[in-house]
Length: 84
Image 1: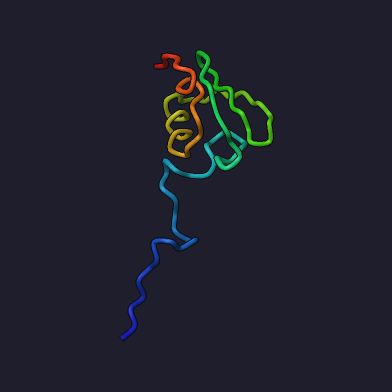
Image 2 (image 1 turned 90 degrees about the vertical axis):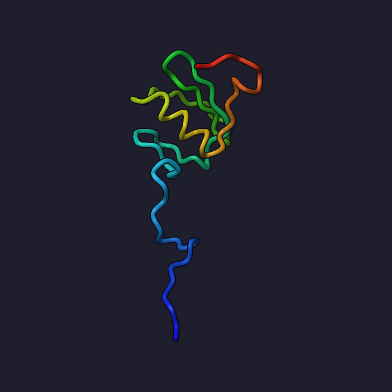
């Protein structure tokens, strides 16, 4: 008997909502991001190609969590800054 069990590594499986490649309204995929810094209500994001971009999301905490889940380095942690 052959069982049709879906693989957990299937490329057709939906990604978890909190770990998707792109954040709504932000044009760069997580794979292109190197590091970020939050300045009041705007993120300054360093891309792996050396570009710096700015982004003001509707949800500051939501965007920050997406960055952290996708292993984008938080510069404020590297230099010991206090963040909210």
